[in-house]
Amino acid sequence: QLQASGGGLVQTGGSLRLSCAASGFTFDDYAMIAWFRQAPGKEREGVSCIKSGDGDSYYADAVKGRFTISSDNAKNTVYLQMNSLKPEDTAVYYCAVDSHGMGFLNWVDEYDYWGQGTLVTVSS
Image 1 (cartoon, rainbow, N blue to C red):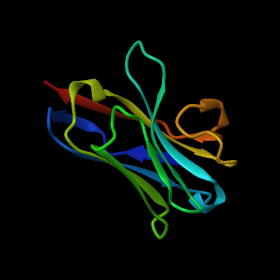
Image 2 (cartoon, helix red, strand yellow; image 1 turned 180 degrees about the vertical axis):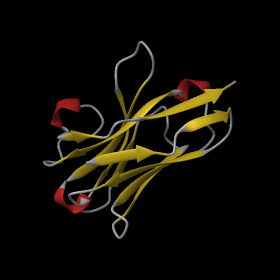
Image 3 (cartoon, rainbow, N blue to C red; image 1 turned 135 degrees about the vertical axis):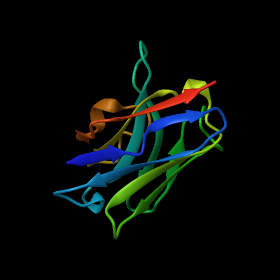
């Protein structure tokens, strides 16, 4: 099970840190962990992902330089630090795990399990 948390209401330019905690398995069991988001009326899009093995991380162009993904193996938790937030970052954010490491930011169907989502609202 994946539990996403940390969303909320923040003003433009503010910061939030999202957490994705796993229970019943460890992130080491999966090759890739990702954050996706879905804004009202839009398709789900990849935000960032990290590979369990070597820690390589990837970011969507829209968030590059503002968001940082990290993992804490001891806590079995993956984080998404979001800085310099913009109104266009408003969305429900989901974490997901991919056992084969092929999903990256584009292949939603490669992800095996999804968290329930946490809402981020950025006011202008």
